[in-house]
Image (spheres, rainbow, N blue to C red):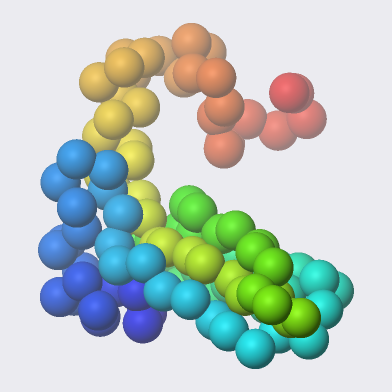
Length: 107
């Protein structure tokens, strides 16, 4: 939610990309710790979306070397915006989508 709050709250994402504010977590000791934080961000966004807390996902999360340690640069993305763009590009027929989150067992 910090990314959303920094951008001005839900719905105040970048109209061109659907992303909220970019944030950086610094001072991570090694790549394993950075990966653990990155995975945690994805789980938290999934939890928030699944439980109708906020329609967000972590759309960008990059681990970067920062001197002797690491940092994690990330942004939340607005799921409503993303769904709208998929519908505009591929249409309402889910079989034509490159990825259908409701389809089970098929790639």
